[in-house]
Length: 263
Image (cartoon, rainbow, N blue to C red):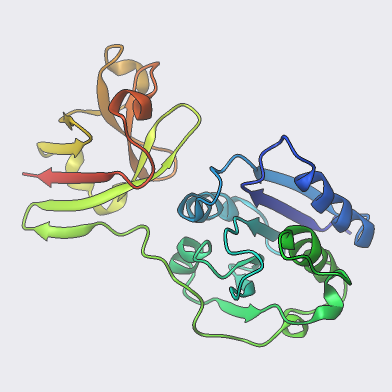
């Protein structure tokens, strides 16, 4: 039998013990689990980036994978812990919109509130639900526990509007930066498949104080230091600088507005 697969995606970083403790809890309940780190370098409290990154990662994993997403600025508050069934996989996360992009891609999803305290650690802290709630529930789900035993279905999970630019006039759209990767590339929420005319039509993309008119096929196509647009591997348009850091050069962060005009 294949080992049960559990992924972890958090904003905990690598300095503290938090990630290791979550793994310890999981392995104490399910010693055969295979644990995969998607990332722990999400900027603290950045729910939109967590939503983007889990949406980019999950589709490459096999069915029955369990994903634990802990970007949880509301830990200990009235926000609910959720279990979502989608695409043949399970997702455990706080009810703060971090599952929004997966839900948008997988409308045939089922969302439950995690309420079965028997699946959690005996003492539930107010500051570390990754350890006390999400990790143990994920581990129990690799055994004989079914999603229906975790808690009741709900229809009102928080859904953020993250990935759809606004059509502001006949030729223009306003979107934003949804992620900055480790190279400094600015990932916008403009999907290439929805703006294919950009490959053949003149365009202007305004971001920060820059106005970009060039769509490159690869990074080395443009001179050093010149911002350009490129089709990223995630399927979104990205602003990049050849061997440079676009976010620093343009002075932009996640949430920065982006305006696209097509002629």
